[in-house]
Every structure is written in C-alpha cells, then in structure tokens.
Image (cartoon, rainbow, N blue to C red; front, top):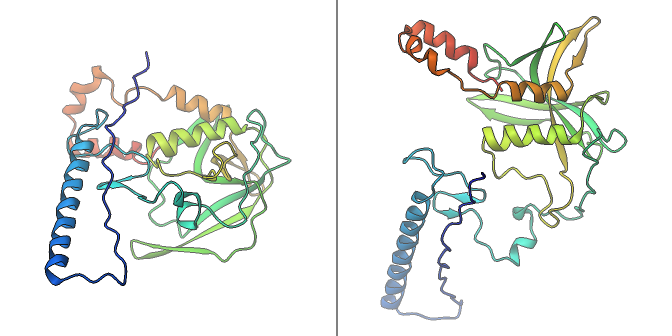
Length: 279
C-alpha cells in the first residue's frame, strides 16, 4: 500500500507595504514601519521553522526534508504566478519552444545528438573503487555520462569551474550514436540517481511553459570496457537497470552485524573504500 502524500498546511501570505518615491514619512513613522516589518519577518521565519519540523519524512530531527523549490526560510522564488511566466530567472529564455516528446521505447537516433562529457583534470573525481558491472565474462567500469541533445551543440568556449582551488574544464565531444538503450531506460536511471539518491529535486530540464514537452537533454551512464585499437564498448542499459535491481538489498545483512562491529579501524576503512562513491 502506497503511503499517502503529505500535504503541508497552507502558508500565510507575506505582507508587503507599498511605498512610493513621492511619499513623505516622518522619522518616527519610518522607525515604526521598519520595526513592524522586522517583527513580521521574524514571525514568518518562525512559522517556516515549525512548518519544516512537522514534515513526517525527515530523516533526522536536525535535517529538513528536501522539497523542490524550497530554501531553509521558505520558497526559493516569491514572485507572483504571473511573474513566474517570464524571465531567465524563472528558466524561461527568449525564443525557447517546447520540444515534442521522444518515443520512450526507442533510442530516437533520428532525432537526438550524442556527446560524451569530459572533466579535466580528473583530480578529486577518481575514486578507489569505481562501480563495475560484470556481464558476459567482461568488466564494465563506470566512467561518467553521455548527453543526448535534441539539437546539435554549437562550438562553445570551454566551461571552466574552480573547485577546491583547482580549475576544471568541462568539455563535450560528439561520438557515434549508441544503440542498445531506450529513452525510458535512461530517464528511469536519471530519476533514480539524480532525484532519489542525490536529491537534486530542483533539476528540471523541461521548459516551465509546457510541462508536457520533452526534456531538453537526456543523460546516459557510461559503463565501458576497453577494446583493441583504442575502442570502447558501452554496456546496454538493460544490464545497467538489472544491476541496480539486483543491488537493491541491505548494505549490511543483519547476520553480519556482529562481525562488522568487531572490525578494526583498518578493516572498516577498507570496507568503506570499496563502497564509497559507487552507484
């Protein structure tokens, strides 16, 4: 039986005082107004705190539930419904049109363009034990993602990001279109990884003006094995989904708890390193 969806109590509208440039106020009235606004803001913050504390799906009393469009002190955007229908800040760009839905049971090779995403240098992105899928007596190692676009990507300048005092460059290269996947499979994987595991609940690549249009980009995981002549074989999505289903078991079996507790720090670290960063 499915758990009923939690419906939070309705929010109280925030009162905003309209001020005109020509309006003249005395210093005392300005002071009273500012004090009143501060009091209202404080009351609103307390209401938001209590509202978030009441969410039944919180994992811990010190953690908020990750709702889309929310910050710690309330909604990320407080614009009116009319204002949210326009503007880059609302994800709406000039000339952007809805994209017809892809056929979910094919790879749509006649409509999409395939690019491999590369981050350079790989410092801090290489892990000790990457996810490996065993199939047909071969090992397929997770190496990142491909992006499938509804339109050819222009020759844009490299995207540079500084993190941990290291400058990274994000590049994309067009590659031969892969065959063994469907749009349904890669969208299911993206929903599982980005929404359920990483909780990127605000990641939305569908135009806000038409929720029924297709996502502008689709992401496909790359589990690959090396081939002679610098070639690579990408594992089909059917086997990736099967691996996820087969791996959907408790991380530690109850019968192993006693031996796990008796592990030395070195043994525990080795156990953790094998699982850290795995899909």
